[in-house]
Length: 116
Length: 115
Image 1 (cartoon, each protein chain N blue to C red):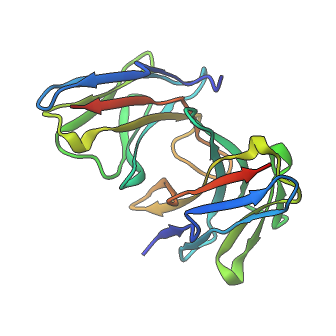
Image 2 (image 1 turned 120 degrees about the horizontal axis):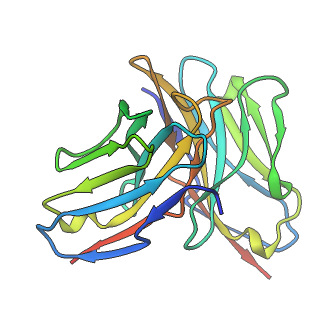
């Protein structure tokens, strides 16, 4: 158990729908990161939050949004879902403001989204 | 452009054989380098990291990696592979961009182990 908790583990939905993925970081970690893992794109960085504020942005689609709440848990919202959004979505957390040699990311087990 | 390349998509080795997984990066500054492992149905687990000091770093599960600045490489090695090492291995590099750091992953190398 890495200490990073993601729910749900599996989710099946239809095109055009909206889903919310939830992440609780490790105790003491202030940063939360979201990654998407798909067969064709590999592991893609989506977005990072630090202590409630957006810190860095990657290849996140406009249909996707995220936020980090005062208790530091984070949610990734995916809307107008398409078949190509089917993927494994990872959350990671770290103590500091961004990844570095000393500030290592710890990953959760992921949420597998299937869009039919 | 900043990039991480893992040239081998699939590698198959026999149990007990040695292993080397290749990783190259493109970055102007000295990078922070990592290897993660993903077992089937699992999340990503950190094997080892390099950010300064000795260029040969030891990790968990008997893995080691060597940073070679001249070759922009950070290859992962294990002297004797066990069947339980079958997994996907990702090299990752921290790149700085616009005042922020981002951890970027290579495409991964899937390792199969024959008995």
